[in-house]
Length: 228
Ligand SMILES: C[S@@+](CC[C@H](N)C(=O)[O-])C[C@H]1O[C@@H](n2cnc3c(N)ncnc32)[C@H](O)[C@@H]1O
Picture (cartoon, rainbow, N blue to C red):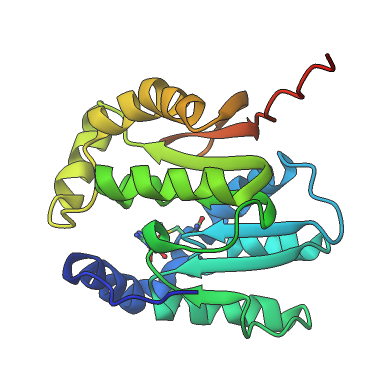
């Protein structure tokens, strides 16, 4: 994979996640365990299936696919988060070498349709619009069967607004109103434009004070030429 230099703003995000990595699973594990389980269960991943998980973080979702015997690859910009993901793979007897790649997901590069499933959990809300578009378009190219996106947004209620104010210094966090609109209105349209059809949307409960959902999109096959 082409590992270009990480842009400065993204490097700041990576540094923040590097610092946060040792605490990520402890702080969010209880909430996210259920969400990762529901997310992994939403896809028909069989042993040997090739799965690419972008923004893999500490590998909570990646590990669920590895547990099902999938051939997994995870990509993230934070070395600290990837180190935690490596621990999970090693605990399953899987060598993380070449399975965990440090890169910007907007530059992820494999031959088309290398993977049966391409997933991205809790990363869209951290991406500027241009990065999100590029990441989605690469995901669409890399999947052979399904693409899965799981994300959440903060509600417009008081707890949501307080949390948003606390997150404001993390300038890459999208505003709740933008993200809600993006996920429910723009995302299905963008996926369609990329040749994918949203076949299922599942709400994920228990993300207080966030509201989350899983979008599953299937790759449309080019129409077979009609015999003449
Ligand atoms: C909130 S964590 C989610 C991690 C994991 N997917 C999960 O479900 O817990 C977001 C992750 O996305 C990564 N990330 C955000 N933007 C990225 C980008 N442009 N390229 C690569 N990784 C990115 C961060 O480093 C972080 O590990």
